[in-house]
Length: 446
Ligand code: C5P
Image (tube, rainbow, N blue to C red; front, side, top):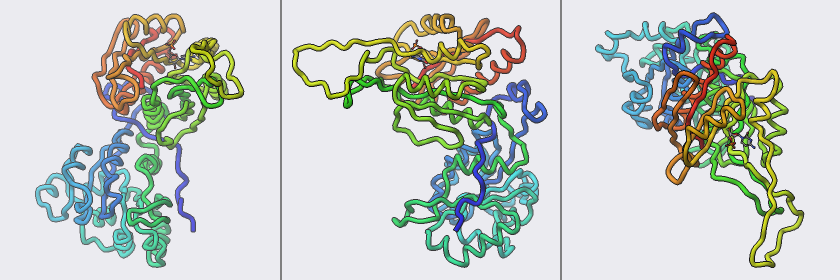
C-alpha cells in the first residue's frame, strides 16, 4: 500500500512580512507576491489538536486562513483558540445567518485558492465521495473549483478498511489530493498507518497546489545556515562545548525554507526535531562544520552563521581516556577555523550574516566583528543566565550603515521570520545595486 501519495515538495511559500516588503521585493514570478486564501476544514479526530500549529504554519507562509469546523471537531479543539491563531472568525454552521451575510458559503468556496481538510476523518472522506452536503464544509467542497487536499487521520484499521481505501481511490481519481497519512504510534495506543502528517509538511504540500501563488521571498535562492554548538574532543569520552541549543539557527532555517529557499542546515549536536523541507548535515566539531559548510557554499546566495562555534579546541584529542593523576592538569588549546570569516572572504561569495553572542558591550563588539570579518550583516545577542542561550524567546536590534531597527523579545520563531525578511530585503538591496549600503543586524542568538 502506498502511503505517501503526494511527492512532498521542497518548502515553498512566504511569511507574513509587511506590505512594504511585499511591494518592494522582487518575486521570481512577476514582482508581486499574492496572498493565498486557504479554507481549512477541521473534522473530529484527535489530530485536531495539531490544527492551531497548522494554522500558524500556513500563516507563516503568508496565507489567509478561514477555518471551517465540523460539529465533532469542536469536541477536540476550541473555536476560541483557532480564531485567535487564524485571526478570522470561525465558520461552523451552514445556517449561521450573520456569517452567511458577511461571506456566503458560495463566496467562501470562490474565495479559496485551496481547500484543505486536516485532520480528515473516514466520515468526511465518505461524505465527499457521496456528494452529500449536509454541513458547511462539505458544501464548500462541492461548490469550489479550487484544489482540495485531505490529510487523513484515523485508527490504522479504519484507514486500511476496504471502504476507506475505496473512498480514497475515488477521491484521488477525482483529483482530490490525499496528503499522507503517516505511519507511527496512534492515540489509541496502536501502531500503523493513519497518523496525520506534521503541520509543516501539510502546509508545504498545500502551497504547492496553489499554482505559484504565494511564492516566497527567497524562491530560487540557496541559503546555507550553521546552527547549534560544536563539540571539541578532549579524549574519547570528554569534550568542550557551550550552552547553545540550536533553536535560533533551526528557526532561521525553517523561516528561510518557508520563504521558498533551498536550505542547507549544518547542525552541531542538538536535541531538536529534524526540520523538514531542507537538507540537514549533522556535524560535531568546528573542523567538521567548516568542511560541511564549504562543501555546500559554492552556489549559495546567503550564508547565515548562527552556530556557536568553539573558538579553541584541545590541541590533541588523545586516543585513550585521560586518567586522573596530578592535582591539576593543563590542556593545550589551539584556535578553531573561523567558518564565518572564511566564507566572507570568498570572492565571489554569498551575502554573509554573522551572529555575535556577547555578555557585555554587545553593540560595540558586534560592530567590531562586522568590520573585522567583513560581513554583510551581523546579528548580535546578549547571552547570559536569563537571556539568549537555550531559551524559546529572544530579542534583537538591527543596525546598518545609516539606520537601525529593534525587535523586542518574541519567540525565536517570530524573530527568525523577521530576520529572514530583513536579510532578504538587504540581500536584494546589496546584490541588486552595488551602491546600496551594507547593513548590520544586531540581535540575540540561541
Ligand atoms: O568571533 P566570534 O566567535 O564571536 O563570532 C561569532 C560569529 O562567527 C558567529 O556567527 C559564529 O557562527 C561565527 N563563527 C564561525 N566560526 C568560528 C567562530 C565563530 O563561523 N570558529
